[in-house]
Image (cartoon, rainbow, N blue to C red; front, side, top):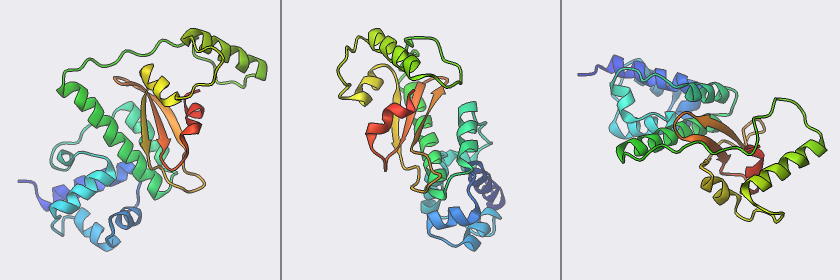
Length: 210
């Protein structure tokens, strides 16, 4: 049987992985920092409902608290690292996204659905350098020709991207000045993933996929 001390260690580890302080986590849970400290030190019994709330806040499955540590994957490590400079809401949003991505990955496995193949890009990946307006226009034309889009605006950009194999998540990433409006990353199994701050307009989705 798992001891209170061992469970407390798992709670602390899960919180630290999100980059959240005890104060930030306690505020998000609606409890005092002293109470959370007692839970993490194994000096207080954790009720089932609170354990579920902790699971959601930290973006880990309930089983994480009761088993050996699950090794984080490269993309997850990168997101956790990125969240360290965000507000408590932004950190919680990153944890929520990580949990959602893991759930989608698990759904593919449980249903024995083949993982998607990566979409074929219209041109090779560009170097990290500033492009001229002319170069941007040239690449835009190449992309439109590749996808046979013509010259008309794309009325449903989200639908178009999903048809190309992109996975798009709307998550709360915070409203502070330094919080993210959204971002894009590559997942080893699921392919390209776009995360949008659900408090911001979807018209900005094109900024995250360039």
